Length: 63
Picture 1 (tube, rainbow, N blue to C red):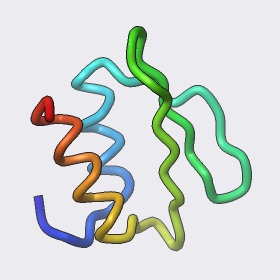
Picture 2: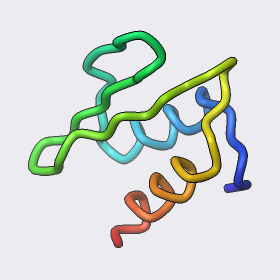
Picture 3: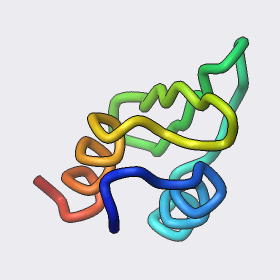
Picture 4: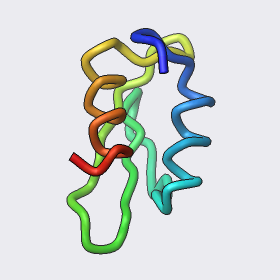
């Protein structure tokens, strides 16, 4: 996964891992997975900032 990522690709990866987009409030997309704390991802112009990409990468790898 590169540092700057399109939200659509991240969403696809999260959903494949069992996450569900439960709501959108402004630019914040809120995902939930049973047994795990919710994940809030700010999306601007269809992209996600590098810090969030790194966070998601760690979550998907199980760290």
